[in-house]
Figure 1 (cartoon, helix red, strand yellow):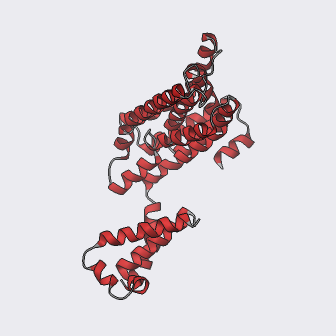
Figure 2 (figure 1 turned 120 degrees about the horizontal axis):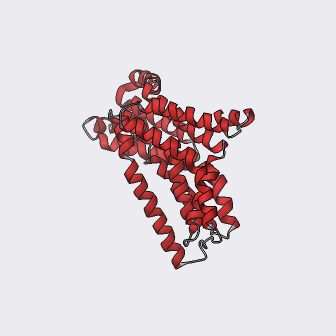
Figure 3 (figure 1 turned 180 degrees about the vertical axis):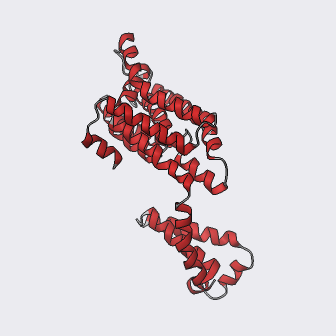
Length: 293
């Protein structure tokens, strides 16, 4: 509490120690927001606030000691190994061209509705989220794939960027969600059960996003005009390009839901399958190296 007395004046630490730990939490949150607004990277801002909080509650010796031990102890949990597996799946799929095939199929099947490319982006991000698990990776991939296509078709830039950003958040719900993995570890719940439980809410969210885009584009056609001209033959021919992603999704979900594989094993299996599919599809070493990096 000496740190609080030093910053806020003598006696402040005693008030916190007397039971109002909620105030301490608010102070920490406030400092975190200020640091982020000032441009401090989130990783450093949270580290600073966490260290100050531990020192405040435990003193310099205990706080500094825990600050050195806790990150290592939490970062070496075996369950976290599921994250690089699923992130690898996403980047292998992107560099193998599976992402573009997914978006192309969605565009041909849903492009005719108002805001069709935006709707296609939502469903394509949902499909990619089911093999990636990382919101940032999903948003980054479709920023390259979908936004140029929407801008080329005279979509409102705000809608194009907003759809990709919102679609990226679907990876927080749709398994294999990295956030759900971390949350399961924190609350000591089953990772597999939480991942499976996020599937239906994620799909419902994607449908709601799509309906909202259609409603907005119908009210203001300048936001996103429909894209027409695709024959049924073109639509059907785009479907096989989605099979690799669909196959990986089915295998991952089936193995986790039936208990045949743990989430980490399912992630490793999915990464291996995408790797094999990428090699069969002609992936060369420079592309593979980029995906792994």
